[in-house]
Length: 265
Image (cartoon, rainbow, N blue to C red; front, side):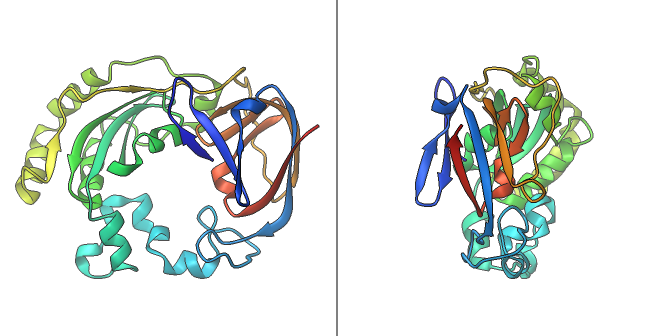
């Protein structure tokens, strides 16, 4: 789903060449049906199975955006000359990134390209987010993130995130604590890459995010379109990339490339 940050996040669901405004459907009884057809989001060929959230197998094996270093940026191998697509790497990895703290199911550390703020935070279901470093490459962002992992989580409990908003926290205070705990490791990274390559952001503005949720689920049951191609229920909310129905939840990002039809019932 595409998103727009406002007083409350605005969602649109791409369906073919059109976009369906989802906020207006809150409280409506809906059906979501999967036709059985998947088209690769990169090359558009039909595929019997989706890999890495929307790709056919050949693209999954060929494209840099499907490589393991995307999930583990500290493993970026562009400088080794082994990037699957060097031009893509130059445009997407050898550019400024933010290391940030966010509050999803609790405080976590993450990284994102500078152009993906605040989209990345919305996709994770964060209610608060604050950039704490600006770095020159994806590799550097991964190394800074790894430095913090022993002190703060780097993953979201999606079930807890959907059950309600996490308690508000002082992200600036957490940033200061991390800087104090990791001072020696940070100095080593700055010596390796240079002070201008890894820049702390002191007192950066915090972003607060509200989601269109009428009611949070008390139990989280996840739908799987590959096993049950028809979903029916009342839309109670949208958070992260999840649609929350009274009958269960579905991660729409997982089904990129799937041919879907949404209707009121």
